Image (cartoon, rainbow, N blue to C red; front, side, top):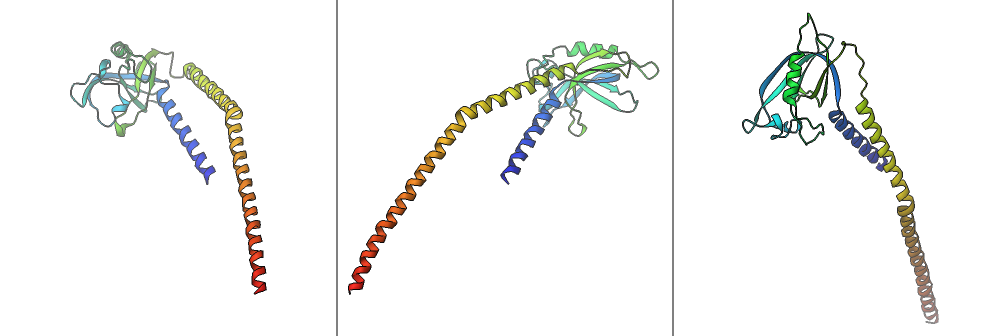
Length: 226
């Protein structure tokens, strides 16, 4: 039972870390930009998926509504679409240090095209698109590409994940060394202490049994004389 609980906790932690990295790490989509605009957006329970209120375009117009820039795009299949928000991140999380949402919006507007003469661009973004919660990925960079079939290698993600794997490996190695040098000897001492205490208790019980046994035998001799 305890083994199942431990594996359940491990799987839950891996899932949480995986979702966190998938949301935070940069992703790139090859798309065709078809529209750019500003929109007054209500912010409520989904506030954690938007920028901090006083960060660049995150300045709120009322207590729950912000004027946010958006970019509409179409994937190469011609039917799948994506809507990106365009907000500054400032010094806050995630650490993209984005302050140029106005410039990015102008670049995206300049790269708009239609089906007759499509211009393909790579939009770097982070986050998820969840329509039911009005959540949009945040675009951080727009760059023209040669075509819809261009191959993009996620070097940033490779470097970050490699570093995290190395850090996790070193942390585990340090923990194993600490456990071997400090924890295991301490547990062994505690176990020896309990064993010694148990041995003393057993000896005391045997001695008590012998003492009371002798008294019982002596009493039995008196009963026999009567």
